[in-house]
Image 1 (cartoon, rainbow, N blue to C red):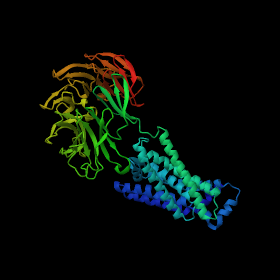
Image 2: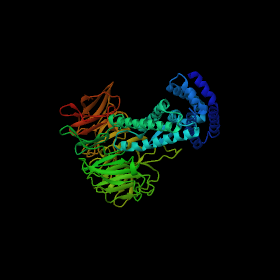
Image 3: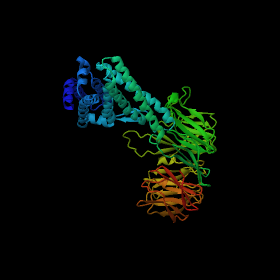
Image 4: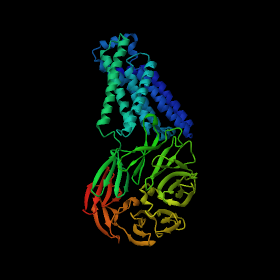
Length: 633
């Protein structure tokens, strides 16, 4: 029966197949004619993936059972000693072979046609913050639309009506699911709306298939209204059941939860703060306890600690504030959370922008942040607001070619702010070694000064403020010296603007201030470890290293609270943290309690050295007094 059905359907649908074939030929010619025009290629790729293939799939599926309505063919078909579900399946597979042939031809064309291949490789379609790939639109979407239309073809012989109805149902359900996914995102039950949409994209056609089969086996085909009612009844039941299954899956499993990354690790007042998808946590080195102090405060944003305040950015994924950013603040114990400013108010100077990065003053009474892509205030990037929500003020930094801003810290009793600004490199520019600029902004007068330029490795500023700025207010940065053709560690006194080159003999790759801010440890390209004393203005210790893991040097180095230095070691599959004394001599090596091939960042809090297991999203603390590991998170 299947062989005869395939031959029959190919004969009946030969006109539709030739139409698809002609369309592919015309698109091939169009791609050849506009092979040099990227914008035209994008339009053509979007047309064939979002219009041509979907429309063909809908028309093919909608014609699935049309011939059975003509000349009383249903009576003859049902009189045969074959189960009705087998008839349905034979028709479906027969037409599916036609769709498969067209999609296969398109896939071959994509591989052999240079212009179409380049367009498909670069194509993506944005949806809810993620991109739908070319493969999904070219292969999966036609199959799902075809199945939906074929299931509905049991209702009428009018192909265009069935195709339109299938498209309408598909769009309505997908839009509804997309909107319904936002509350789940806000409640942190899934990592992306696309996950839920993908599930529903599979379950909706499956629900309609089951409804079509139930209608075929139970409905009286001599009464169209009763047939339509039977299909609607079963379709509604199965679609609602699918929605329920997806909701239960989202609620009952961790597969749809936010990725369990650990965010915003900072050491403040001898305590360790971090956020995960489960909440905002504090680790107290005094008693070795990890305490959850608030629900997870940030969605795709950054957080900063200062004084007794925690400031963070959250992005709204649903409701009237969909897509807008909000700056929020709470106490470091998780209490009194409130909003400072948002970007959804059309009367606000921040309307429509995004907020990043942010920094709280050491006293916790002021918050500074960068707001970019703000339509109403194109000149003002830097904004400062009091922690009680008053005194919002913007500053024009006057950097026309600014690409990205990174905060360092407040200075001079919160009267100024230090920023790192990376600049755009112009196309075909000969100067490809342009570095970041160090800016000082007077928050009272608005005056902006460039204190240094040609700064390399500005990502160091993404660490806590003490990574670049000492407690004494001195700023350390890696500067490219053109005369020596190397990257040199420089210490700047922002009050006197006096600069000291720490180690000009070799390129510095990473550095770290100690807690008191009077010593600066650094690593060089030739595996030298040195310690610079700001009080003496010279290097007090330097030594060549061997066997240490110096990948990501700024993260490989840390000061313990007792003044010892901590370094990573990697020997085969065994990773360790090593303690070095004042003479840079290794005292002990402590193997990590987990195996990893990745670099592990080191932090120090009280008597603990903290390391992160990036593969299993864990935090471990090593008690430097008892020499025991403790699972922090």
